[in-house]
Image 1: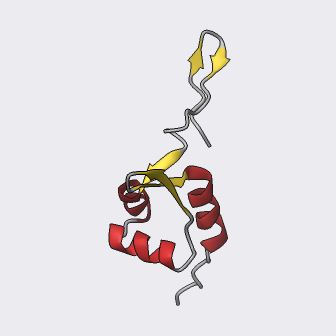
Image 2: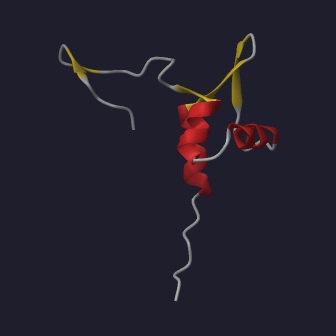
Length: 78
């Protein structure tokens, strides 16, 4: 899930900022527009985290959970 870079013999633990994604990063991950990310927030599909002064982020874990729960296999074509 997270990179496990070794630093003096210990695994690299993600920082708070590594665990948060901007709307733009979420949009790039899903290959959608930031407007669609906002609509997903308004529909309750993604839970935004407000950092103050209008800064909105998404917890990486919430985004990964959304992806896992939303995956629907495509039926075979033929």
